[in-house]
Amino acid sequence: DSFTIITESGIEAESKVTTFDYMKKSSTNSSNDDFERMDMFFEMIVAQKRLMKYEWKEDDESVPSGWKVNSKNTLLSPDGTSYASRKLALKALVKNGSTPEEIENMREKLSYEGWKMSDMLPKSWHYKKC
Image (cartoon, rainbow, N blue to C red):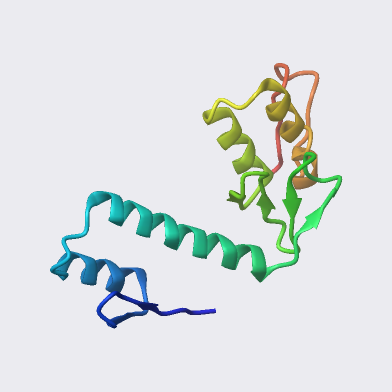
């Protein structure tokens, strides 16, 4: 699961921290772009580990089309972002300005986490007993 980065000078870095420390101290003067690309590299590695850790089920009725869910009930969006719950995925979809259809598709899946609707609540509102 772990990996090592070998720099241009043969120095081994075994974590994001040690890699960034090397880049800061290096005489090669790493640019902001270098740091951004390295940060994206580490994010990609973390995402790949997450994908490999659990078997993801596709076409599961408890998530919208294109989404995946694993045995820990973690959701994986079509763009590779993971969410610990449907509620958190819904909040992110709303916050990020997703289409009304995408938002409604996720809202319909809240029942798989025990959320319910009531005619006494405003449209699209849900409740859950604590």
